[in-house]
Image 1 (cartoon, rainbow, N blue to C red):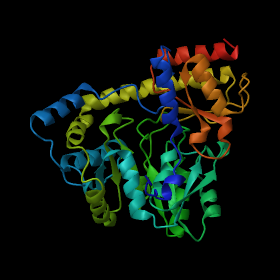
Image 2: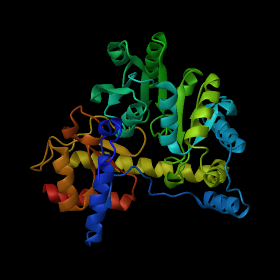
Image 3: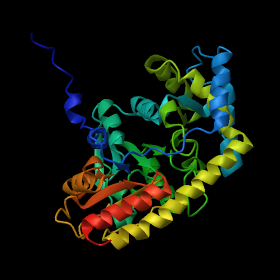
Image 4: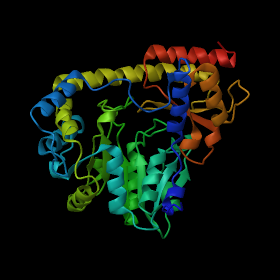
Length: 393
């Protein structure tokens, strides 16, 4: 039987290696191994009881049918109030678009803004799916090497230098996956000015902004209504599997995004939307803040611990729950080859990490990503296991 040919874009989208490593780790667990998972970016915390109770109440009351494509109005209003209460930003709820996770939000943004063969600038390293969203829209992601000197983020000077005749805009994340670093507000303002001068778009993924540790987070929305931001209930709100996110878009874009959402997704999960309303209750927000401080405690332990093990941490992460660690000087035969090193650490120490190859092509063999979104005691045990493997314990 001759199978029909697949679309050419499929070949341009690489596997998500973190998920492949997860499969390998689960196979070891099924064989009886104890594995400490520090690979997938998923909080070990789950939705608080009030959120679960709100979901049950929605189910029992029959709120399980389609909602409006833009999301239920009470949730859009609650998100707008959240910006007002946390950042003193007045956002019209009509600009808020509730989506089936941040992934759907990014897909909508790329579908709306990227034409065939348009180039979109982004830092290298960055979240791998970002470049694949651009590819899926028939655009071309342009990865710009951004190292420790740039905090692993794009700068205004880099955007100016790399803007070409086919460049359409920039796709940023602050704080970033895999580095946990943010773009400093003044630099972001300069960057946005460069994009505006060229008539381009700026999309900023802010899904980790609630998990900021060094300073009060500042949304890119403070820079004007022409910015598109992406956010999510997955990270700060601990609702990864509920698949719920949102966009804030310019007022003129709302009808376009609504049309696309109607056709591509119909709507986000009704149950998840009604449950998420409970996220904004004062008692629930207090739980999230306690958990944020726990993530910071873990970061404050793991960064010096990694340095003691021989890893380089050239930029201390100020948000999210990741460390992007330089492995070139670690006391192991696989140092300088993060793919081989993470496999050795998984099989010989029982700790799951992610090699840099997932996040770009700028020195990926030199870096690995560690997620500290797991219990403090497990992080301590992981450090002990790696220290024993390296002979430093």
